[in-house]
Image (cartoon, rainbow, N blue to C red; front, side, top):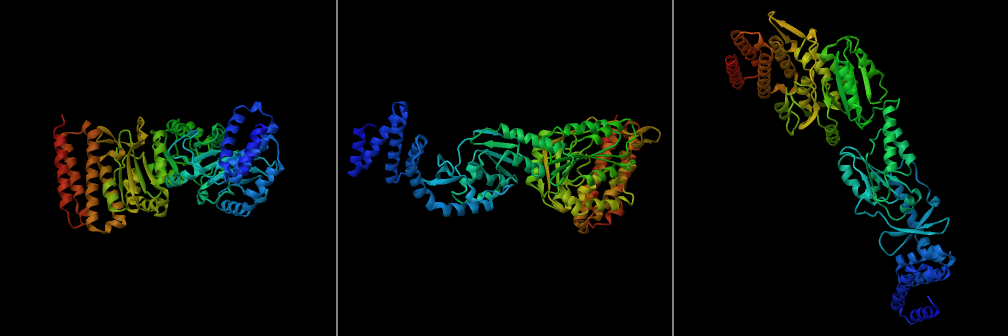
Length: 608
């Protein structure tokens, strides 16, 4: 800007032609910006200072400060600094301090924020709503402009891990996007964490205005504070990492470090386990170890625990149980019974040792689909009050998407539908609160064959009375190849054939009696109509189990005449007055039992 231009600008301003002066100044600005080497620093400083003063007088504060910022970077001016402090900072300090204190109150910080007087920056407000510049109190520099709580349109970097994990927003100092997302994240029962890389600038932004949404955020003002937080607490690790302003590689490395720390920590923290995978095992140590290794490849830590109960195994697979016991992964709980307590005793033991809010029952022969597991635990967190979740397996358990309310709706839909144990998930809080295991234990001690072989189905009956049930077509469990039955669990029938002890006709009828005892113990059984409907379902179950026993065992070594006699025996047993006396309307039960008898006889008569 030559002397002539300078004099002309001054004249226009004196004559009130400010608009014409500003237009000319923008022309000069373009020239200076595009050709900086053509002008001395002294001239550039004078120009930017003058342009800033003209814009300031015109009320264009945002642009004025941008010019002052450039001028100060070329040569510090006490005059500019005085103007900035007197016009923009000093009048606003009381409001800045009030905003800062109020925002700190609602913030969830692992450590306390600084005192207002200790802040490195003041804010320089502009006429544009929520737009500020930083003013460095020590160096008196004007730093970059920013928009308070700004929401940016697109991510800079992100790593969307899964539908379960919480979110970590990694930002330099702006948190607008995390604030805008916090409501939707909270609805999903997930937490929202924010990692700030520039602590001093972030704290300074809290002077700009109060925001109630800050209370939903947990902020870390350094990588170290985030690391310490997750080492000392049981909050789930935020594996979904998003940034609108910086790289995320460092935060990913820290999250992986925290995960590894939690896995190898000597103190097994069980305060916040969402899902315990309960594996009762007997004489199959190799299968149990395979299962454990597979489950520990999961990327979850405090969300998950794996509980293995060894039922006093005595065979050559004991060494594999020793490997599980020696495992240093904090997610493993190993327990061992001194002698074989039967399936019932082992299942009770493994569930009592578990600490999770939900318990997934899993045979040591089967395995969990880890991809489906993510969906299941995400659902469990969103529906914490469900009593039972029934997931599907690859062969034996196939369900549809159904939700039923507590009581008769759940009972009629789901009672006695879990012959195959793997895949059923119980809400342990309800299990404990309603003393379900203890109630079934009382019945078991009287010598009950239903509780002996199917304790989980007995628990399921009672749990249907206490809470809602959800079934899903999601295949959580991959069924493994069954191991050969232990000799102690095989019965020889009439010296002609081998039958699994639980599948003998005598055992099936005793199971019928046992399930009836459980049903009769339920509060809801006092209603005769409900009792009649439940008994019909029990009869349906018994006839179906008889068919399974005939198809897989008895038909191989039993004559047609004997099979027909077995069917008549079962019909008489299910239609006995010992059961029918508990409700007055027998018509539906007798009709259904008759249909089962005729259909089973047709099945036998067509056997070659």
